[in-house]
Image (cartoon, rainbow, N blue to C red):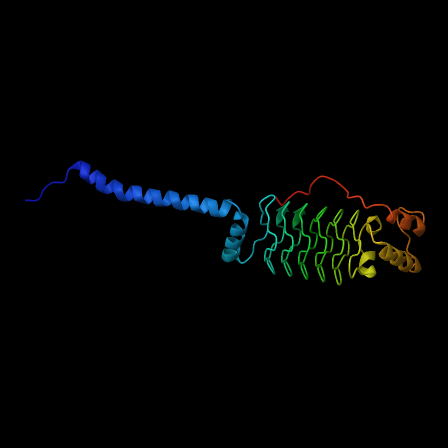
Length: 237
């Protein structure tokens, strides 16, 4: 004769695996939250997006996060938002960064060779010593940027805004590209570069906007560069 199981035993038998499952689910949830939203979580989310979609357009990085030396070569990051992100010596060569917003970022020594930065907002960013050779900066906002000692050979600067940018000792700066930039006359240059600009542009019959003469402009170049302040650029909607 079969013994009938008591209701309490039935409830216990049912609850035991349910409790174990809930504990495992809670633990997995806590781990996922820590992994994707804790320290460095934005990079984990980026990698997940790249794994699923193969691209991460309009990716939002965590404000003030540090990704010095990050390997981001050849990635599609168009329209992405970098709010105060540290990217010193980051490897971004060949990356697609059109219309990306870099809000007061530190890109000193970053590798951006052959990167596409068309219409990107880089206002007041630090790009000292950055490798921008062959980079496409068409229409980019470089106002107030620190571009001292940056490598600019082959960089495209058509319609780029250079107001109050510091281009002192920039290497490979093309005067032909400079002529196509906006507010090039409001940028700061080292003495040799400024003299070269005045000589070649004057010979080409170009005037210097907002200054009575080239001598006035050269005198202005001897003053310390002042970074233009303004409202922070807005990230993508």
